[in-house]
Image (cartoon, rainbow, N blue to C red; front, side):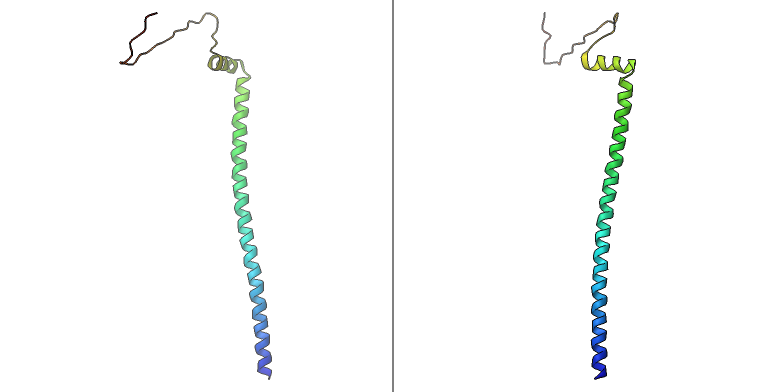
Length: 100
């Protein structure tokens, strides 16, 4: 009979070990998933910080007189006094210039 007792004890200890090992593997899997999510969020955070820095540089530039002048020229087609405006027209070979 003593042998049967040792067999039962060893089977119970093996079962307990396997249960604990399974829990340990599950926790490692969760830890790996969380680590990957943290890495993704850090990459997003870095990208957003760079975007904010770029936008702040643009804001600072457009607050200067040169930036305001450039914005006025690009967006509103304004010119400084005394500047000449040249309008260039081009035609494709199929088109004929229309006389005004």
